Image (cartoon, rainbow, N blue to C red; front, side, top):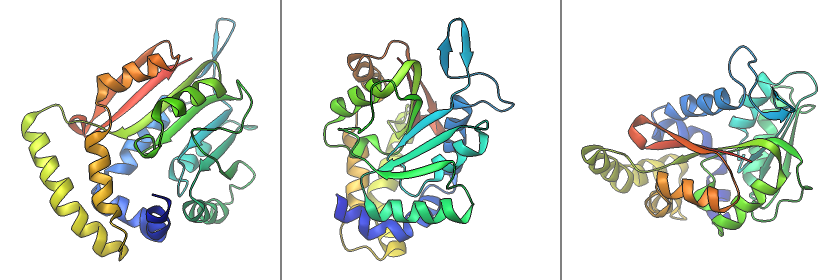
Length: 241
């Protein structure tokens, strides 16, 4: 898997835009609105009876840092984002974007394994992940680690491809994912590793919305909810510690 993501790192952002018809930008902005709503409304960690805005955020599977950059843009002074990913080539692209935008003082890119997070208990006000969790080897271990590093009351917000909730949309999505997407993705990225065959297959085998909610509860999250985007092609899952 690391070899596949290394091979496409240079083309990852372009292919995300082409293959999602630009929708991935909208989906990520909706994650941002969950973490820090527009206008700076409080959304994060309880301090007594006050729900404080999050300051320290971990973005797992940050890749080229799209989501980390969005989150940083809305953080209050003193806030910081750790953009974590296991793949070095993806992080190299992310570091370039962070540097170009002059955000290195507020975003730190680190090579981190989601199944073995190298942070103390209760380190973060919020943890985010975008299109990452279906690629971890041990999903339950990763969810438990995320729950561990969250502060009490902290939120985990997971953006991931899911299962469309209408039969006609499932059929159309399957045709696109297994027929058109591999051809376009491979052509754009000049890929020879088969990653664009792997990605649709990983979506098919990933837990559906209700099953992922149950996995979050098993990992120790209390309040667990989700919202479907684009008919359930993508879902945002929210777990509160």
